[in-house]
Length: 141
Image (cartoon, rainbow, N blue to C red; front, top):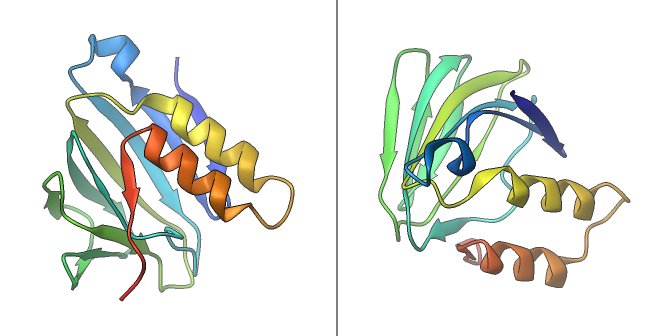
């Protein structure tokens, strides 16, 4: 069963999770609303990520380089590489996210959604949550 989780201007719909795949991978469809962005550049300690463009143009910032991801294109983000993403357009964009091995799962997004649902989120609690799930926030440069 798929689940859609909303975190600010981001919607994540899990298609497969670490629970479904015995930890092999996580697969989700991500919708990024107009002018939305991943609020904190970060890197992953223990998984690699591939994003595959489905609709629109999502800009990924990977290792200080902007990569505009369009339908049919992909970007590989190796563990340890700082990245983030944003939608600079006036239309929602979608991409497929694949994480391997599958160690994140939907629980992280559920917790972040709860932290951001009541107005301005507490940055200390957000950082603690990110670190607990293996995402290491990096100050923007």
